[in-house]
Amino acid sequence: MANRDTLTVNQQDGEKSSRPNGKNYLLAIAIDDYQHCSKLSNAVKDVEVFIQLMLSRYNFETENITFIKDDQANKKSIERAFLHLIKTVTPQDNLIVYFSGHGRCR
Image (cartoon, rainbow, N blue to C red; front, top):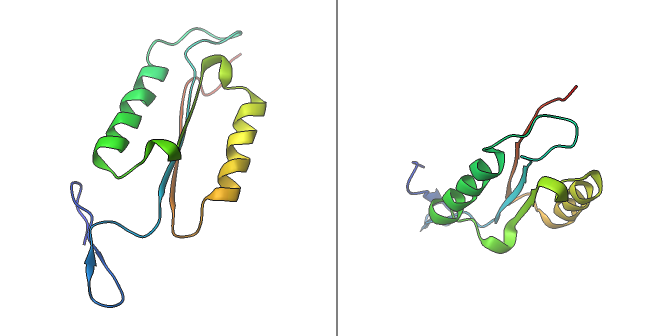
């Protein structure tokens, strides 16, 4: 049984655990500054707030969060982050990929 504030998992031996065995991972990408699109004002801020929420309430650990923003958010760095996660995340783990920015520019 789970609710928003407390996660309880029934294990095979009947004992209850306050969190699952796996780890929580987050890949967060946020872009406010674009070369060929209008600048945004809240994409990076929204992701920063989301990261703090995941750390404070949902058992995420800083070392399992990858935050790529603005000029760091290029094809090479995003691909590198996904490749790292492919090698790291196990079937018992959770992964959230969060993108905040323009969906498409013309």
